View 1 (cartoon, helix red, strand yellow):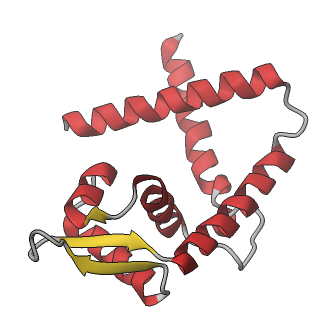
View 2 (cartoon, helix red, strand yellow):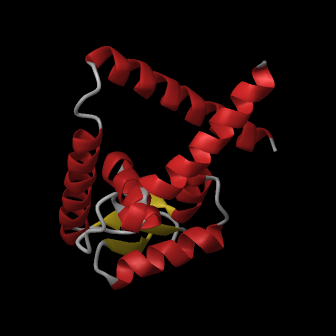
Length: 147
């Protein structure tokens, strides 16, 4: 019986990933940003200026991947790169005012889309779904760290 649940969950998560990021926000709006930019800016907004290595570790990505993503954000003026004040070999990244405005806009658009999608769900359904989705993400994160 568990195998059938696993198959259903695998299918639904795969479809969710495809649909949830439809043209980057569920609504096809050109005003939003791609997923990697969104996640990185949200993280920098929450955590503050950080070393590239710290960001790489947090996202479980190699430094070159994170550096490419940061370069794209830097080109848009959404982040600022600078040397660590105590160790010039360490590259630091901080969100700019323009980046803050961009992440606020993107987040508002995404929340609006989810609000519309989940408008007919009860408070209990929203609570249960958010808890279970968080639990699934933490399980995936733990598994990835063990590999």
